[in-house]
Amino acid sequence: MDTIRRRVPFKFSEEKEEKETEVLDEQEQDELIEKLRRENEISNRQYLVLIRVVLALSALLQFVFLFSPSKSSPLFSLFPAASVGEDLSMPLPTLFIMLSLFVHLNLAFLFHPNEIRMLLQLNQNPSPLSYELLYTLSAVPPTLSAFLWRPWQTTLWWCFTPMIVFIVHTVMSAIDNGNESIADLETMKYVAPGA
Figure 1 (cartoon, rainbow, N blue to C red):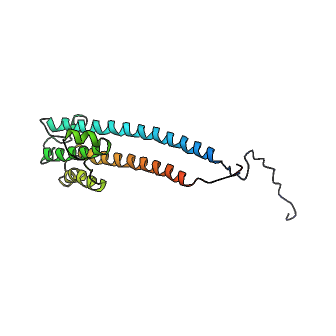
Figure 2: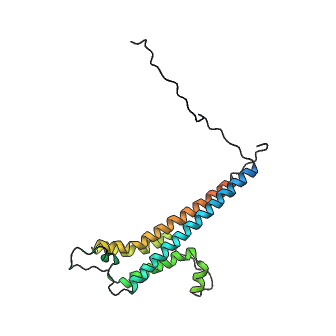
Figure 3: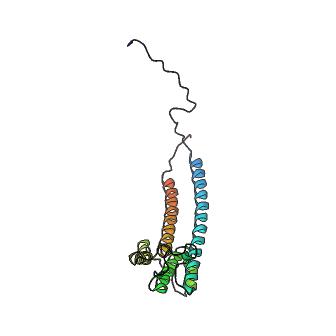
């Protein structure tokens, strides 16, 4: 039995086993980098429009909450509270909503520094707070809500601002990474005579 050889069928691969490295001349490199730069700018503009819309809608919700008479979470209209007697609202809701609007204003500084400077009649463009500080400020209301054992609707409502900070931070990081990648490509140019 040891002398029987196992048959191995021939396998044909349409793809080449080894990828050949394509060498681009200087003009092809410039064209490729310019094409990638245009695609990056288009996606950056789309991201910025999307994030501005999300930020504006979130700020609008915060303003509606600020001027609502009941000061309980708007999520109670979608998901009513399980028990009737418990305290549904947060202490000092106006203070926390003003803090949330301050965080939204800081995030808006990233996109519209000149417009906000003119709106607030400032001499120079304001510099926004760091993301770490914005995360900390926006985490105060949901943390307090959780410590006070408020219903999940209240805690979730106060989590919207930290979620907006996270979304803005993530998108701005992605935009910065895309811009850095294009800059890195420019530094990787090479001279290939005869390519």
